[in-house]
Length: 43
Image (cartoon, rainbow, N blue to C red; front, side, top):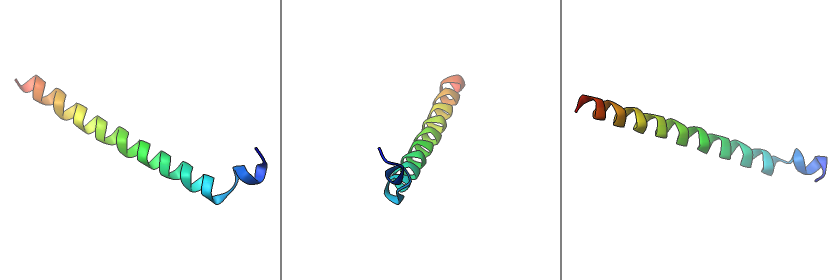
């Protein structure tokens, strides 16, 4: 892998997109988990 490839805009945008998607997924998972545990605790 060349240094030019590593710093290419395509790879950078792909990393940003992947990181953003992962962050959104983790946030959604945390919200669902919190809601589920609170519902289970209320029963």
